[in-house]
Image (cartoon, rainbow, N blue to C red; front, side):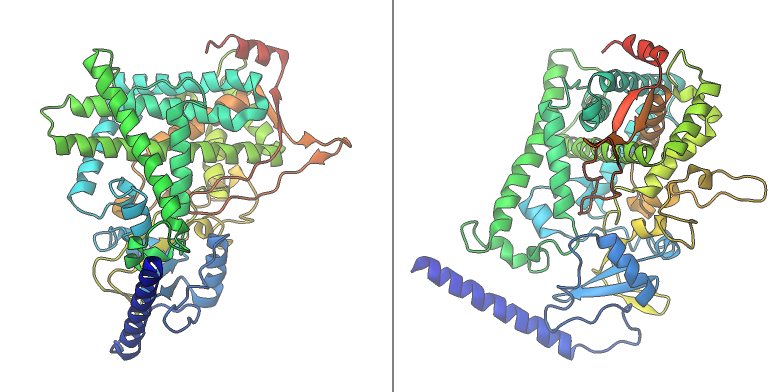
Length: 518
């Protein structure tokens, strides 16, 4: 009887709220400027059923042909703006960045799933600015571009060492390339962030980070949870019929708390024992007297840095393996350049980068061809804005359809083809647009780990190509298996599993690999 009473109260409350929303929608005054066009919605629920749950960027790209560069949908009175051109994203998210730098509040991801202190969800306010200052301080400590010479060499040495170890492990585990890459990337980012050396790709921290970022991709998918548009549903108990989202939220909260607490505790333990190596957390803790609030912010800034940096490069490098499997001519051209510049007696280093233009273009083309953050991170409008004659209401969620930008046939010729040459200028043919201008976000919410991701993509891809061939697998009938260009769904994506063959290019290449110590 008690459960039935709660059920009736909740249903009654829901209907009252929906009726209020409908009345407000029907009787609100019509302004001078319309909202951007979009699919026609239903009463009360709006475009709830128009939001795609799979292949979101592609479907939003189709809307570009129907509604133009800027379109909109409304769900229970909350407006979402989809930007389908780089021009519109630049004009709004970068040139008007102060007004477009907030994050929408996600009740599911923030309140229920435990991510509210991570930088990806923070409003553009004091805590966010503190995190960015901390990350800038880390970039001064580790970055390839603006650090001192000694720190540059230290950071380059770390990445080069992990790239070499990845090459060695690939020789023994060619079918486990995702695991090998995950360990290498995880080692790099864990050492930069916490001074922690994982044992293998099944290391607890690596495993937790992988699980946490996979969950985050689900939590931030457009239209994924009704509680984000009807926040009062967060009070529905886990046992209530239809409240499976509460169970998922509890699992997510346990994962992200475990990641943040375990790694931070490791650094504190190492510092107390006098064993701490230089890293982001220790550097900040040693910068002066820290309060409990300072430590809380350092812990979550580090969690933000690690959870982003440990997953996205692995997905991007999986795209690289897929591209090399499907486009052997690009692989051979990159290998020829490496052979001419580096030779066959060592692996490439960051010092070789300026002499390897095709390999640089190949790494960028990987990001363009199979970007793993197809809608970027959502922005939120702080105040009403009028743009191109359209009203962008305060509180609107704004999504930049980065996938569409990077596959727009008006920008890239044959955009679905993997072609690094498109990014290299030649006489009479200028280079097509640099994908790095789009793939790392816009304005004040652009990715703070751009330099690290860029360095990893170049160094890991060239190291692998210098000593390995990557080819299509053969089935039981002796026929080549052509992988599908297919990705998982969600805010963060990766290629679906596919078979391939990774083998040393020659006996000399194998001998070079075996000389690497792990």
